[in-house]
Structures are given as C-alpha cells and as structure tokens.
Length: 425
Ligand code: HAM
Image (cartoon, rainbow, N blue to C red; front, side, top):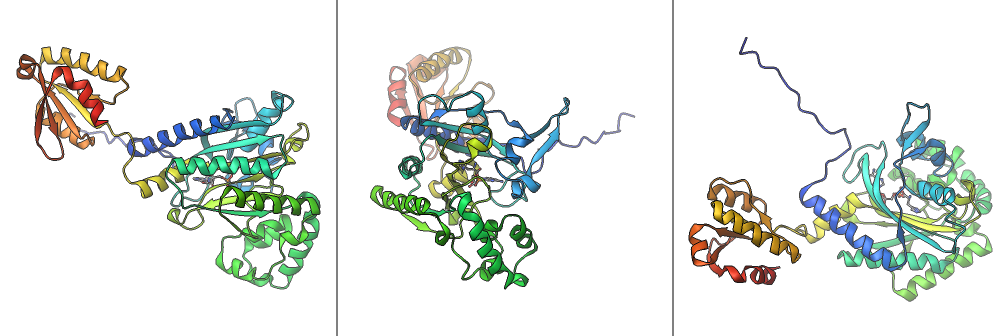
C-alpha cells in the first residue's frame, strides 16, 4: 500500500500565455517607468479600461472582416448571458470610455496613454503571443498633421530614452471612406486580371475589404501586386495636403521615414495617416508598433464627431529587442548582505533599512544556513558584491566586502558601509 505513488501532473500555463519574471520583467519595469515619465511630460494622462468589453465595441471598430474579429478574439458568453471579449486591442475600449464618461466634451485635445494586456488567438511565432502587452497612446480632438507629429516626436524620444535609435518609420495615407470606393474598383479590376496568382485569403479580402489585399504577407501575393493601383492617386485634395504637410513636418523635426504604399494595417478604423515601425531584429512580419489616424471611430461608436490619432507598441517585442541590443537587464541586485549569527542579523537589519531608506538597492539574505550556500545564491542572482557580517566583523566594527567576480575581499568600516554602497551604485 505504502508503495503506491500517485502521479501528479504539473500544471502548465495556457498555450500562448507567458509568465513574466526575472530579467524580462525588469525590462518591462524599465520600459513602463520610462513611458510614464515621457508621456506625462507631453500632457498625456494614464487611463485603465476593463479587459472585458462587449463584443459590439470591436465589431463596430476593428471591423467585421478583419482577422482579429473573424478568428482571433477570445470571446464568450458570461453567466449573465452577455457576449463579451477579452480585448484584442485597446483603441476601441478607450474610445468607448471617452464617450461613456463624456471626456470628449471638456477642453480639447484629450490625450491619454495605457499599459496593459491584450489577447488574440493567434498562431504562435517568435514575438507573437496570445496574451501580450501594449503601451498605447491616443489623442482626441486634433485633426492636424501637427498633432500626429507631436505624438510621433514623443514616440521617438521615448524609444531614444530606451536606447533605440536605429528604427525606421514607415508611413502611408489610407485616405477617407469617401475616396475608397474608387480605389476598391481599381484594385478589383487589377485583381481580376491576375486572380490565379493570389491566395485564398486574398480572394476573400477582394470581396470583403479590397484594401487588405495590399498587405498580404505571402510572397507570391506580394509579387502579383507589382504595378498595383496606388492609394495616393485616389486621395481627395484635403487628404493629399494632409499627407504632404505630415511629411514636411517629419523632415523638419528630423524623424526619418519611408513611404510604403502597401501599408494599410489590419484594423479597419484608420483614415489618412497609417504607420508602422518594424525591426529586422524581431524577425519577419513582426512590427514593433503601429498606429494612425482614426477620425470616424468616435462617431461610429456613438460619440461626438471627433478626430483622433494614436499608436500602440508591443511591450513583449520591445523588451525582446532591448535585451538583444542592450544585453544585460537593468536593475540587477548588485549587493547581497549576508549576516552570520544572531547579533549580526540584528545589526544587518539596521544597515539594510538605512540603505533602503536612502534609496539604495540591497538584497538581505534571511534564510540562515551556511555561508557557502548564501554565496552561491548571491552569485546565481547576479550579485557583484557580498557583504559578510559575522561576530568577528562586529567586534572590529567592520564588514567584509567580497567581490564575487574576482573573489578578492576588502574590509570596510561599518560606519562607512552606506557611503561605500552609494559609491558603487
Ligand atoms: P496593432 O498593430 O494591432 O495595433 O498592434 C500594435 C502592436 O502590438 C504591434 O505592432 C505588436 O508589436 C503588438 N502585437 C500585436 N499582436 C501581438 C501578438 N500576438 N503578440 C505580441 N505582440 C503583438 C493596435 O492594436 C492599435 N490599437 C494601435 C493604435 C492605437 N492605433 C491607433 N491607436
């Protein structure tokens, strides 16, 4: 009887949903802190909306024919019979909140940012998860190219503060709903001449939303698009002037960009400016961020006619890129304080609290046990220094500081410990 061992299966996270910890979590923390500081400087206030929204919020904004609404939503009926969705993106939710709380009727322009998880039932690849995080910004009430450049300057200053300076901005104008029918006709005519070269999805897109054919990721479709009609040739006068002014302003502020006439984005709400930033370090098809103007969305969701512009950056991808480019994660606990014995422990608490109240980073070893084990742990945690405090040290009023990389030791007077740690920081 006593020999029967029950097999316990280990619980696993849901496919596509990750636990974040250690170095990656420290990158997340650094990015989020930098975002909060940068965006509030530009007058953007933080907003936090629920993860669950009514399904209509997305159907009416992201678009019925989009991949997100068609096949990627985590939707279900809750116990009260409501059809809800775990948000696949947050522009629609923010717009819903701005309307619901009448935030758009107070002085313009309204600028907000958000940080949080999004959910898409996508096929897994590098940098593509089913729960992922976005940092996004939305500004309402300004329909000008100037407002777009203000937001883009903020974006590139934020990326620069994180140490990313080599990223390229790709822009296009997708015009307004008024200029689309003529373009749709032109692209359908073009398509008819070469339909056998396009994939099944493109055949569906040409019927439902022809604009999306332009951004099919399949190489043979991209080849078949050679010589396709250009959206810019179908823009109305105002959209054309808007786009020209945007380019002029971007040159003025020194943000390099390339024009990509096939950039249309996977969400239906965009009008005029659409843009993306891709990084070759993230692998094919992986945009680091994307956004654009969406002048019709507020009205579409029942609010006052309000122009708007925004973007969202994939936090998981940004953290991945930073660890590739910058290497070591920030904020390693560089110092571990190891007390040995009862009296030393009491003294160590005093020292540690003094360090913490001075804003210094210090890891206090509290598990007791042998010195060797404590040193191994400190090493494994990436500590640079171990501060050893035993009875001998206490008697002499010193601490032993061991450099964990070289193994060499120094003796510091106890009275100087805080100043020494400060000098190391
Ligand atoms: P989006 O292009 O769908 O735009 O997503 C923005 C960013 O979120 C992407 O560039 C990517 O970095 C990240 N992302 C998207 N899907 C995944 C995934 N499955 N795994 C990891 N990262 C992902 C929007 O969501 C719009 N709401 C942006 C916007 C704001 N437009 C106007 N305002």
